[in-house]
Length: 116
Image (cartoon, rainbow, N blue to C red; front, side):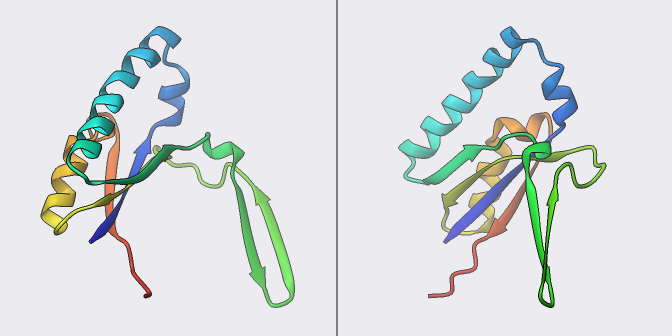
């Protein structure tokens, strides 16, 4: 079964991180990526640009609304994601707990709804 791991981070804290520290933060993610790949669990994943670069589209009746970010004043924003293959929720939770983002933010685990 596939699961999405949604990594929520504090963008303000990330932006305030010195570039040398940001580089150090990348190493645990590279190791995590390698572990997912070696286990055959990696489907895809990526880091996202800051929430202020996002655009929300709403269609109400015949009117399309386009809203530029930021959208909500929250402590954490969606910073990246993984789609993984795991035999069950417990295994997906185990992978989420190993994600470096879990130690500084939160990782939400969501099963992917297969329509076919």
